[in-house]
Length: 389
Ligand SMILES: *Cc1c(COP(=O)(O)O)cnc(C)c1O
Image (spheres, rainbow, N blue to C red):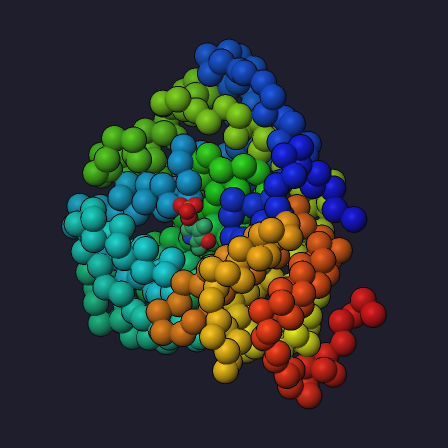
């Protein structure tokens, strides 16, 4: 059974974040700590060094983890608007809403960019990028989303990174919904900047994002930031000088995060967590097939973190009603974000376990019956028996 007892009896969140967190993570926030206390500087430095560990990066002083107040988007925006020089140009690879957001950030910051688009059901293409970089010498940086949370697609960052490196450009990866949930090899992927946040696979509460990069590379960007609060160089320098955030830190979220990191460790680190998420995903996937749903992605690129499903065919399907009936039973699912087809999404990350997925599937079956939606699973689906039976 799950360990996510919530004193408020909140429903379980099958979403891409904020997520269901453990009771112990929530309990760690029952404190008030001042940001000028020595304890606080110790906490921040402990978190930054443990994060390097989770990332599998050496703690020899070359790499750093810079924390920034705000949700994940703030971290991505901080990297793009701090680390691209005034005359720089970014190639964005996009196959979903989060890829489009990278382009939107550049648009706002008035940074030159090109967007290389692929369909939402296909991974981004390293060959298109190769040609683009060969033809356009002005491009200084390449940005891509690792797990495109719109569909759950895992983009091939190692192939992309290899191309970026061959052309000698800087590589920025938004690994918001994958970091901590699977091993990412910074070296093999030739990653220069990687962004994640507190409330995805590490299972903390929302409040800050985290940027991994080489100190020397970051320091070379001094003076380029177009924003005061999103200046990543200034943020990093403040951490190095006195261990402090420049502006009010999310103290409670940082405390919760320390507990979340301890729980990640207790689960066997990233490998252990990856195992649970893969299990969650496979139970969900086979269960949904047997209920008659079809997943949007039918590919080896599907991540274990979140999945998109088509609306039931041949029925008047009202997602709002479906969502509400599930919520009343204690389960929160997520709307779709695709541009051309109707989908809804189910996340398999956060403090949720196989038993929770099975309970969700049984609630979905009940709600479908109540709504008079009768779907026939394909023969293939019927043969996909869940591994647990
Ligand atoms: C969650 C997420 C973000 C950040 O979204 P916020 O709402 O700002 O936390 C960015 N990119 C991806 C791929 C994400 O999944």
